[in-house]
Image 1 (cartoon, rainbow, N blue to C red):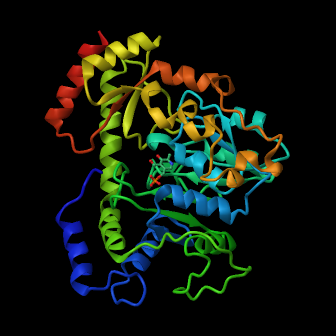
Image 2 (image 1 turned 180 degrees about the vertical axis):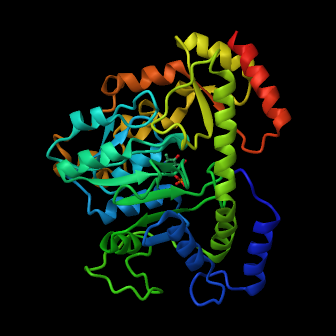
Length: 386
Ligand SMILES: Cc1ncc(COP(=O)(O)O)c(C=O)c1O
């Protein structure tokens, strides 16, 4: 979480004093207004704020695309485990693709991994680094696949002048504590497609959606309950006002670090260097030992990619052990429809991904660093590079 203060306190207090915390029936309409403002900001027709976070947004989007047993969904091997678990929650099988040198899903590996069972691609805009969305959407179009963008780590980012989340069929965002804008937890999905919106919305309220005037175009189905509340809506409206300045400062700090240090450090490339909303700078080293030695000199803000725990497919325990549900009968790995699908999660599936993460050191950026602090960081990174 980067910027939170009096504005959010006042907005939350207003809701509490009104005693209308439920999103339905009150006069403040904080959730409704956030959804309108967020959709307008991104340039899409539909948006739904939810309590369940990015995981719930992804699950709702996958369900909206009617993906289930017998289907494969392509995801990168470097993403938070939630991307994989959302696929499994819907009964489908995640198939792991390589990332390329930019830390985002490799379009060439997407092409290699498509089969007749593939139903969707989930590109993940990791740590603010945008995916190659034009190429990915083209591949999806050629093969009749859905594209569900995981923008959980890139709230408000762009690629080629267009917001991430608006390239594919649906975009999913997280507003948890670690994200660019935040209400502690929560998330959102967006789309331009009315039917996908309706299906995802249906998934978010036990198939009732009693408080909406939507007339569903399909038989409603039982699902989850992710309704947002007015405090969350009010906080997110204030966070949204801060989004542009946070992104501008992330970019400014990032650009300064790269400009000042490119003579002594090898920064990894980006699919869109000018727009990259990277919440870190990533430096390539000849090997893991050199990267680790560098991180040790920098301290808490530096970390090797290979230490990113549950962001790496080889550490996704429920996939490694094939125990993807609370009872065996509901475990997608046991479904007869999923027999023969490529549920392989060994290191050999994506060796390049692991190689990159072993050579990459991440240095976290703070958009609120003063000029003085930034100067100190630059000096520290330069000294550690020697
Ligand atoms: C890439 C990615 N996808 C999905 C999620 C899930 O979001 P949430 O924690 O809000 O459910 C996260 C959260 O960290 C994430 O980083």
